Length: 151
Image 1 (cartoon, rainbow, N blue to C red):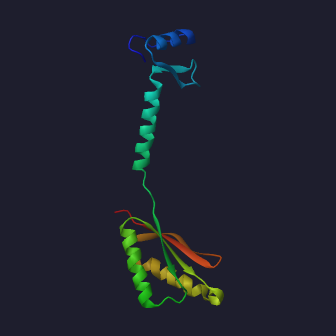
Image 2: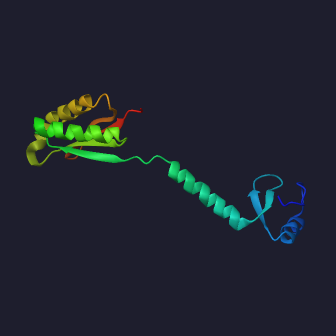
């Protein structure tokens, strides 16, 4: 509200005159109220503060990073351990891990091998993360999501 205007019920023309006298704008704050609530403020400054608030909220928002780890249905022990170490690093950094087994050609026959591999993977990462989505077959991919546990 302006400095020399008392809060109260005024006609639109009176309110506009008050705003004009102070070289400010009459801004409708809540139009659904009865009577509608207006405020005499500098509109450009008001918009600037709104933008600033939104920017701060955006900066505080947690950005979820999803890292992907790809396996074949016949991934050997060495490769598995190598990828497991990467997944541990990702979970420690706070990223989600999307582990998937990609079935090429006829390797889709080894669906059970892929599922066992993903479940073993989830079990090995039990201390660092929890399974968000159990292994699920989508086309030629069997996918599973693991989220980091809160510290």
